[in-house]
Image 1: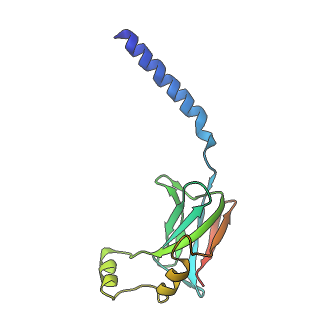
Image 2: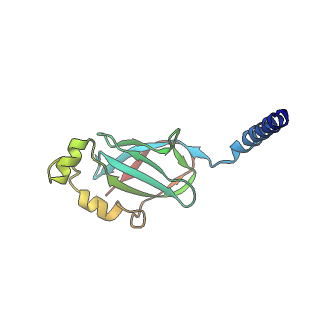
Image 3: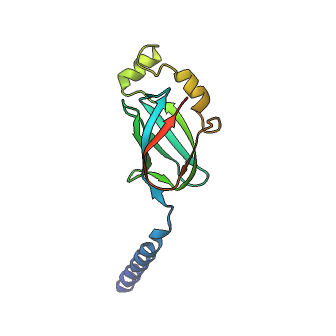
Length: 143
């Protein structure tokens, strides 16, 4: 039993040392926030998706003022440095708004059909953003 415990302790120490040394090799993530607009007006409740050429995508949801902040994962805000395809999808603000939208009522953006036609899929959207450093005032124009 003592041999097993020594072997287990040695293995745990080895994993801790390897893990501590390898953490700095991940992708460079920088904070990204901004506003989603159409014809100069904010577009609320849009999920903004940033798809890099390689690596994990980032996303954020615009508030009533069109402001968004990208999320990289559950504990990290931002996006990986590089070029991103940007696409959007409307997201109801509440379950009631979702039910109203399904019934043809509610507050969808006036040009939602045109927005989704042009910017609603990663393979269709013409939007590209180069992320090189932290940015707080990125304007995503859905014109």
